Length: 144
Image (cartoon, rainbow, N blue to C red; front, side, top):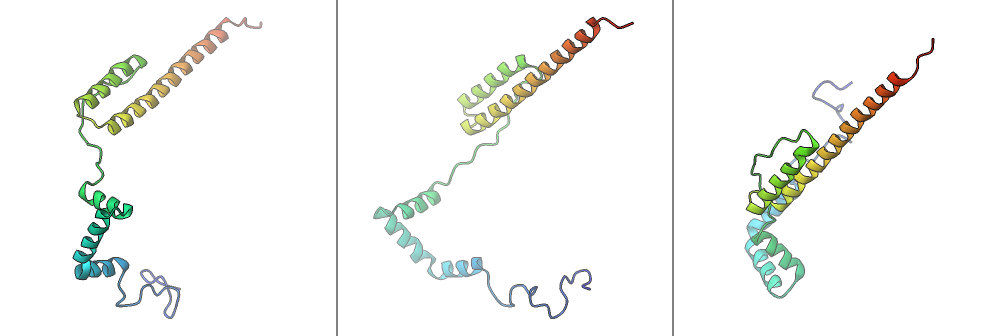
């Protein structure tokens, strides 16, 4: 039985792993880029200038990377009741308009506020239902 740190018995052919001295794909790619990287980049630029859509996209992705949403923080009012939702939404819209939040961040936050609204609505409905059930139980005539 194999001991700790030795998952396979000696002579097991299925658990050998990568042969010694073999290189992974990233290493092979990096070596190729060291040797031919500049020529590859120039070729890609030429193809892009000739209108090749893949080369154009590749060059544009490298020249202007995809923008990521900002991670600025802002003070949003507490949302404990349904009446707190209006000021919270207004706060998000204002921050997006001022440029303190990206539109994507604003959308994410308003989605969370919408989820919070549904939770509040469910809590209110449950409380009202419990109150009605209690009222109904209290108004039933008791059998003697």
